Length: 278
Image (cartoon, rainbow, N blue to C red; front, side, top):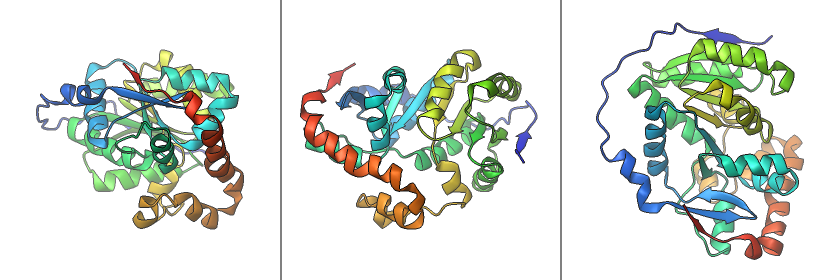
């Protein structure tokens, strides 16, 4: 059964502190590197959050992508996906392998921003500033369970709606109508790559949501449906091994995320990586 949850269009008003420095935070490091032709912004977590605050206040539609090794591998064989990544407004490093590859290629990144951590931070930002959040995707009931967990930590957070749905194009008119009716400021899409970000790219011009983000398996982790690797394992970049042990059915994805990505970087990376200033 597909779960749907909508709330009133009334916005919760909360006290907001001025952020005079937010628009200046990112300008200190406006650098984008390339790994096998995929651009990644060299930004810290704090800089990303300041940037997102600016994007949301602008009210214009934006698309953020969180790049992991699977994205880079997919981009080598999927031209539509590669083009979409190049057009994203902000691209952050998600997987630990991205950090290692960037360092090997001589263009080190200063940090990573995972989909799970980004979702928690966005929930805090939305709760503080009265922005409305819509959770789309994952298995039936998972988005709703995720919303409950987020609201338990941030009671002022407005969840505009939750829906499982499908990334198939034939469902898009209905989904657009539903999201329009919910009036979200932040749309999190959990259909997995490459479907979620291609879905955003197709629908964002019509939806005009201020911020849309593909978050992969984030809802599964936050809802508790799938356990996340302990912090110590994540710090040393072995989260993929933890996932393989807990979810052996992911072995095909692990091959793309680890050995295939490493092989591509070692063989072609130094010919494709060149830092580009905005």
